[in-house]
Image 1 (cartoon, rainbow, N blue to C red):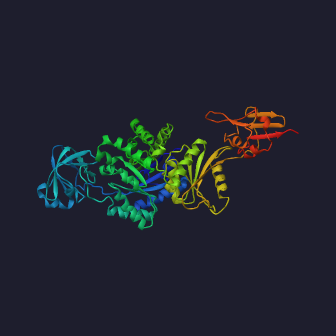
Image 2: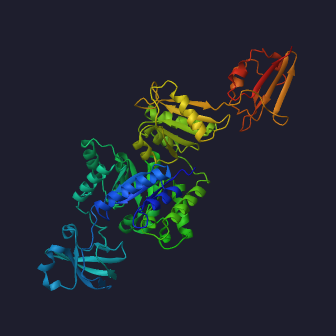
Length: 559
């Protein structure tokens, strides 16, 4: 399976049910709804369409609502303005424009009333994602005189960045509050906060959600210089981090973004916080059916850095090839994941709780036993998140009866959510029934191993999962090996047969027999063999036969 997840922004190119289903079939795990655009009516219909498409695709996806934040923009313009290099202009609130007739014809109106208050002399003012660069000269009452250093055509609603000053606008605006309430009514699964600067920006929203008794994970978007500076404290209070490279590049400078990206991803991996890498990953596919080689390398490098998810923005929201873009993203990620990367060191990981320690142990056990999957019984998905911190090689099946937990786990690296419906959690045979269901759905074979993590007592007992065991699939009742796979040894009182094809090298026989009749090779596969030197000591008690989980051993007594 592909382990890193794909987040896709929906928009005009991907708003219909059939279009969204195509994206889900192509590999989308999380659908992003951008609240910077559209109306509540359009967003409501989009969310309905996502849920409908998810049912048609038979795959639950999470809905990430991205709040706009304090985006500073140019206000409405009668006509676009031509800002020539070395020309001087004035910038100020729209409401102040009529106060300055002397500046008519060179007045740039902004929707942000405190821009002049926040600015000081000789700082940069960047327009349209940094394509137009100006610098402040001096303040004149309610406006600021600026000089254009890099010119261009300025249109309405284009963004304004002030990378050299600390903007006083709150990260969580009144519009964001209204959008959040709308999202909660619509049943969204994740909330993204834009332009945060410090941990208090996240905590403010967490307190609000707690007051409303809503447990919605928060995605902290890192795009401001101050957020980069405060990244460690921000990670500690965030549920997910997004490396939002668009405004980050404008604010910090594009040359610094790669190093910052690596630093943030490494920190998140160590802390066990999922991280999304976003912005311009396959930008050229907005207009072209294939990406550039540089873009393909960008996606692959994010995977090798350790990102949990990669995000598409305009490529799927307004591009000409939304489905093809997701298919390409899926291919690049899968190919990148074939190359192993270094995993977080255990000594750098927080293993202070029982759950964290047990989940890392489950990852190691699955790897050492070559298990097909880790079956994590969970109500909230938290156990699955702890399992993936060590980047297990085996697929993680997040088994739950909660649809919200299924959607939340859609973002988790390496986790396949597994919804149980119509099961009685008080059933004493619940675990066996779940194993049978997984066995059938994933077509497990005789000898395949499942590592199972769960809590004690009732199957879906609330609280921390603190147990781990290995289940070996056993369907073959007796030795069926042919001439090529059957190993035999005769002794005075009978014959021992070993089907080397059915044997899974679990070494149950080695641990059972006190006479050292069974041995294991010292290579990586630890293949089981019959020690013909000691075979005469066999007690014929059939203990090894009874303990063999795959029916690979047969003992035939003489007469």
